[in-house]
Length: 469
Image (cartoon, rainbow, N blue to C red; front, side):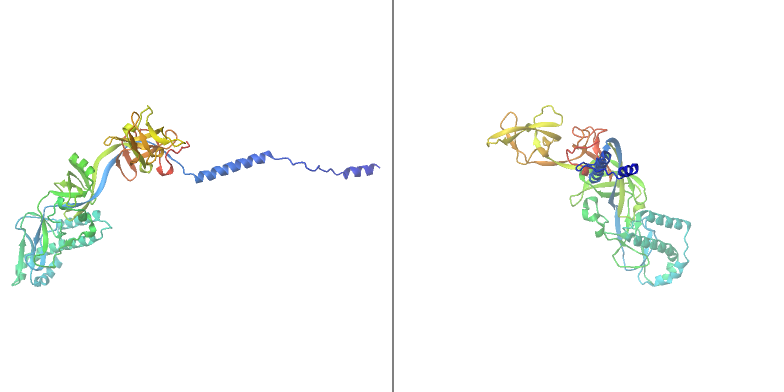
């Protein structure tokens, strides 16, 4: 019997009641909730534009601006008296006195063949080698890949130099070789520096220049080459008679006037990094455009082979608040006259009285508080936040029935200040800027102060947007 009782206990089945709910695992729910929250945060992070702050600090920028200018000199063209083969005896860029032999003209061309053997035996002196090296070094420093035509000018210049060296021996034996051949000896009509190229700018003054003269696609330069035939009355060389010369650069009148008032400016020539001081004068060309004339009293010979020169003006440093250009934005405002703005003691804000209509159609007025962002002393008008008004709104003056219609708009340049936790536009006055930064005035009435925080990238926020710190 005991045995049977034991089996009944082993075969006992316990059944669960129907409708009983299984126990909920609270730990798993909490973990799942945290996971979902983190997922939402990550998605939001990558879908939201990130607003970076920038602390305003004092700084400075060196005002070095590069311009392409036109070099003008006292240049006198000399024409060829008769057609024939020319042989030069003065280097390009060499100074000559009145009566010095500059070149000869062989009208028949027979002397060219007779002198070939002499050319091959010519040797360079130490001085001639130094001049060659100087010419090559100057060309290498001033080479510009975008102006490949200069390679051919350099080649022709070297060819003239070689021809001149060869012609020295040729000249010594000229009488023996010439016989009955016609040789014209051409002498310098004046003292100056000789140059064997022309471009049509000779004799031009700064006031005769136009915008078209600065476009290189319209520019044509002709290099006269020795040992070649030159037609009668054709320009063969020019003489630069003065060490005084000018570089003319395009410049807006306001900036040009400011530089002119300084009297002198330091100039760096990009070709060889040579620096020199120039007197300054604002002029106007034939087309009415403004230009800055830089006048030099030295180094004319150094740049005698150049008509176009890249120059850098080295001005004084501008100091103020240093702002990244990415933070600068342009915003539009309404312009309102002072009588329509009521000062109730709130800094940067004014009250206006705007006409409105009640539900029954009765004309009434309402008071609105608007932000003030700048004041134009010339017109006596304030720049008012455009989000609070609409074009066509009618404004009333406080003490009389005079009204005005809101219509005039204008823009300001500024940044978004975030000191108060939202994007608040502040006007800036730019003193100078380069490719990355701008220097702006500090402590202006509606502007910025040192240690203010601004939005680094103005495109990442909207006006009055709240900023999460």
